[in-house]
Amino acid sequence: QVQLVESGGGLVQAGGSLILSCSAPTIIFTMYAMGWYRQAPGKQRELVAAISSGGSTNYADSVKGRFTISRDNAKNTVNLQMHSLKPEATAVYSCNARRVYPLEITYWGQGTQVTVSS
Image 1: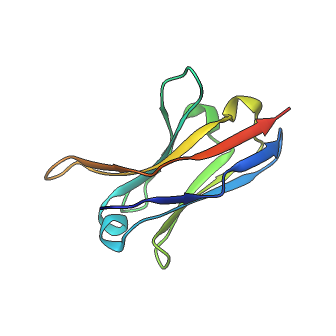
Image 2: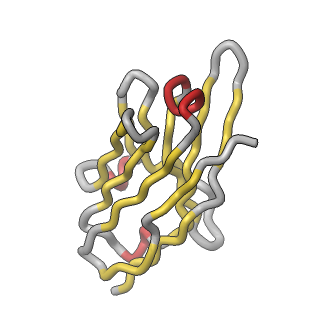
């Protein structure tokens, strides 16, 4: 019913950059926090970066200073700029939309593969 559409995944060499994008319906984009999670083979899914409806951001310690999350309100899109990519960043990256109040509701995209070669 609610579709989060991701794009931008692919193959990149270590040290390179990649930009992921996620679009959401307006009613979701404007009222929910948006984020990017990733899951590598054999690993637990982890938060990479998130941005609130008000624009506040937070990042995993492992990506601070190298990744930037932003919102494009005109396009109902959240972007994740990834720089200085390392092989350990290889994972499926999934877009997430979440609200807590008055009820906790979460939506997920299908995921996009990011592969960083050495």
